[in-house]
Length: 324
Image 1 (spheres, helix red, strand yellow):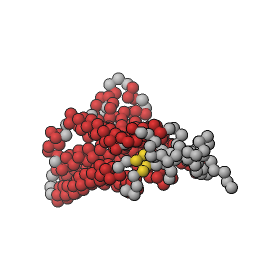
Image 2 (cartoon, helix red, strand yellow):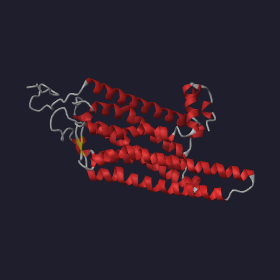
Image 3 (tube, rainbow, N blue to C red):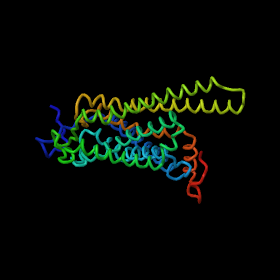
Image 4 (cartoon, rainbow, N blue to C red):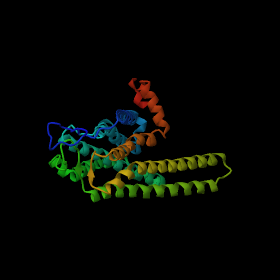
């Protein structure tokens, strides 16, 4: 008979079995996930530096994008590397690190979701009620909302993972496992249904208003060249905003729905299945796509990146540069 490999050979009766896989498959997984992790860190770091350094970018909307970039940066820097380790047949870092990993992952992913809700509210007010935008969405209010966002995510993560943090490894069936248990119903409602519903409702409203405004303006084009120019410009900006928001919703659903659909079937989040590992990493992939969606679609980001890469931000008064 083929000899069975154990995660901890010295623990014959309590060690988990080691399910090996082809070396080529392991290398492909490591290279792909490592590349995505590095790309996530670099892209979000560029967003953080751009918004933090250049004064012109200190707007309420960009402060929310900055908070989103910070959460996604932490996902790429800490959560994704540990997720790579979860693809291994055995977890060798101990029960405490297993619980802390999921605690950090829950905070950062939750912060990413809540920040997307804040961005949807910001875009809703900007497009549906532009006359009152400057008075309703101020930098001070945005800073308070961002702070409350992170406090909520830490508190929520602590509550759903309390048993796992209090007694790490209590749900492991053998040594070499990394398994946690959460309340599936609570997690689905507060981490998926509520934020997703809010985002979709607001974005549908934004899309309808943007299209209706564009059609109304197009139907009232006058013969005055200046008025026509302004109308076309507004029409294009509204439709571009609507298309961008559509991409945001589609990508967010693509990354998050598989994870929460699997969560509906069971409450254990574990590393044993390669399918689970893939679904978890797909969830984290959204952190790599966020800076592409929210930043690369804007010209100011490309100008900021050029100044950062060429080290022009090290020059005096570079924070006053025109990047808009």
